[in-house]
Length: 169
Image (cartoon, rainbow, N blue to C red; front, side):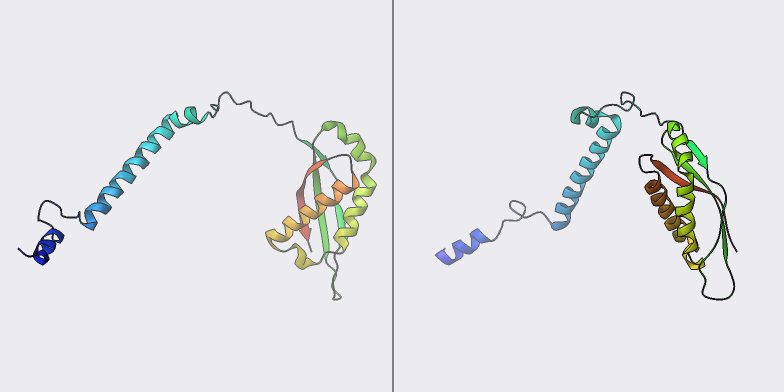
């Protein structure tokens, strides 16, 4: 054999001995290995072995925070005329409850009640009917009233403004 034929013989694989695995077999092998890893990881996670290795505490041992009892304060009903451009007047009747953080804040809240009512009246009179449409309008109204009441009762913290009744006419 010449040099050329010997090189060609070395480059061509002998069938059955040095053939490359097909692409499908390689993908199948990799996919099977990934599936096996995912299944074993899921089994370890759901049996709790992973939590023990990482060091997470069990849910039974974690101290639960006990929420203090809710304290509500009802404001008197508010009736205001809304800002309109036409001759027809629009009115808003609003019943609101304030959720406080602590029961000790009730007397201090009652002492500044005129300031809260005034802040609400001034804000509500500038609203238009379009401002109150949809859930987005109600959400914005709630957030504005919450910000105004917290500003009026500064050291006291009001958690939420709850609407009991809202009538736009």
